[in-house]
Image (tube, rainbow, N blue to C red):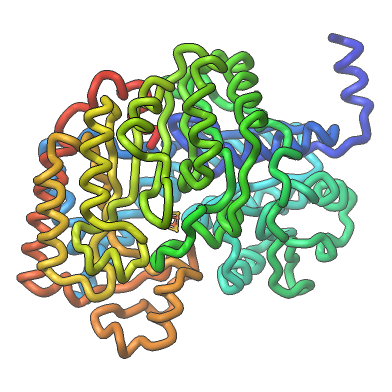
Amino acid sequence: MERERRADESSNRPRVLLVDLNNHARYPTLAVGQMAAVLRAGEVRVRLVSPLAVGVRGAVRDRRARPWGLLDERLRWWTAKTAVPGVQGLRKRLATRRGPSSAEAIERSVRQLRAALLDPPDVVLLSVYFLYADVVRALLVLCVEAGIPVLAGGPGFTDPEAVGEWLAMEGMSGVFAGECEPVLVHLVELAAKGEDLSGVPGCMTPGRSAFQVARPLGDLDQLPYPDYDGFPWELYPTRVVTMLTGRGCGWGVCTFCSDVLTSNGRTFRTRSLEHVLGELAHQSERHGVRLFHFSDLKLNSNVELWRGLLQHFQATVPGAQWTCSVHLGGQGDQGLSFEDLKQAREAGLVRITTGVESGSQELLNRMAKGVRVSELSRFVSDARRADISVRVTMFTGYPGEGSSDLDASTRFLAQHSEDLDRVHLSRFSIQVGAPITHRIQGTPEAYPDLAVQAGASRGESLPHTDARMDRWRYRRAIGRLLGEVHRINRRPLRATARALEGAM
Ligand code: SF4
């Protein structure tokens, strides 16, 4: 050990501090684990800091609704989109008191980084979503003082304006857009030597380079398995590893969706079944894990791989339980018949989620979801019959939505109340780069209810108000939908799925 330590200390390989700002409260962040693995394979010395370790709360998904939650939700729905002057500003001020960008979270993150910089790395890498901008500004101050280059990257850096805003932050050495794995080691080697980074594909530097996005990685089997050493495992309530079998979505045309544009989403590519099974076995052995969360946008994009997983999962990790997202729609076999779902349950699938989005067929058609409400009905009933806990996502506020569409969603939920364990209801957001966003920006007169707020900072979505929220009939319909969602979400999650509560 001592000999290894001395060899390590004498190494002239770069030392990198990875900051996991995309802090998840239930499991290690896959993108950060993937970067750690690539860097360590390139003999770069990696340390990891996770704000979760110093009490910054990470994201938890879809907990059981609290008794007073309905009132809270109604208020949130109205205040989020109303055009009534002053309400938005008040909401923003309240939001800064909690969450990952609250003053307390920033203070804790700064203290953590200050301590980590006592043993200074050569480069700091930040894996971020845009909502962490305030935290990043605070961390940059420390890195500037210490003279350490900082690189940021994340799935959202595909918007030139947002990249421009981040490059303008004092102390930001570079912003990376796209899939960094092929060039990551080279990038940190250059950064550690203080050399120009603007020639690295996908890397933009202040004042030097035009907007560019690194090309999607072709062969995903080239990547090492993500490395989750150094994450605060003791703070996760259950030991879960998140997996990704492919990047992108085999459907990829929903008009509201920007996931298919982010660094994980552009073009659909898949790993081989052998590579995925190999990782399942590896992570299980390395971290003593039998719980897995698949973060694929649509795990049934490649039906052959999906069926291969169902066939081999239990032989690979006996007793494993897992959760995933699927999408119904498109042509041909989706791998989601009742027989498939029964086999999936036997393979350990205890929770499944799918995007229902709306109970209105007309809206689904406009969204290009490629699915009929009747198919969604059949699926949720079948999944429940197969003893799989079902979660669906829906949202309100799509352009053209009226109170009758909202009522169709309410009816869908009422009809499937016994089939569903959780409903994640969100509000339409104008996602940068999504097809509907281009239409809204190109012909705003065709969307008179939606007003994009001028001067707001660019993020993954464009802040907007929605005049429908100030109409009584529409708001009443929202209230009925929220009531149905609340009734379902008040119930405890079924026992077989509880180990993965909060993971999706
Ligand atoms: S199925 Fe899901 S991930 Fe794929 S395009 Fe539609 S919303 Fe996006």
